[in-house]
Length: 208
Image 1 (tube, rainbow, N blue to C red):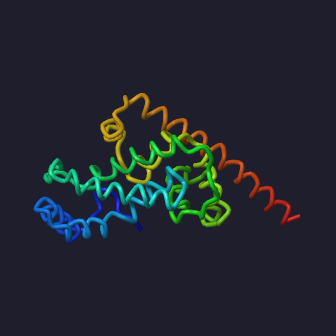
Image 2 (cartoon, rainbow, N blue to C red; image 1 turned 90 degrees about the vertical axis):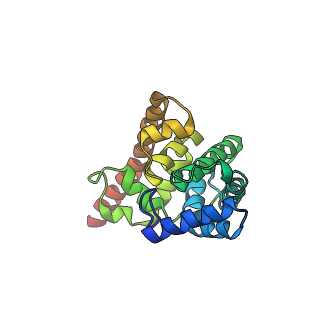
Image 3 (cartoon, rainbow, N blue to C red; image 1 turned 30 degrees about the vertical axis):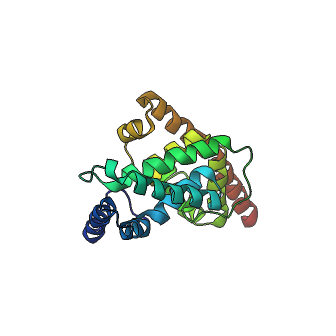
């Protein structure tokens, strides 16, 4: 399971602070530690927005280099994760805005978990959440959102940011954030409900 913004262990937090201290002294070994802590989560977040594994990895690689270049601007009294992930989200949105088409991609590991966050517990049977078809449906439903809507979903449900944090990180008014989240949820539920109906019809046919 990936870590949320507040679930780093005490040892990981200590390692993170030590790594930042090393970086501020010009020791690149600190960057290696930060990569070990944040790379997987960062790539997953970027992937959900740009929808291309290679592009997501490039976004994260550049974000780590940017963090190294700007580490002196980082207030080490604050957590590193939100500061770093903000760079990931902004870069991913810019790239997604420029994309003219979406290529066929391998399904991300987090599709089912995001589905559980987005869909009410009674909306679909738990067994459906576990099926490859449902995870694929979530992935395809995300593709139908705008880059800003995808970013809002990732920040709220994957990075576990509050709406007030999203306002600060995206530099947009609260009404805009709420609208992105609302419209994204409506689109996702509409597309996922189609799968639920199809599954139900298939089960009925199977019982006849």
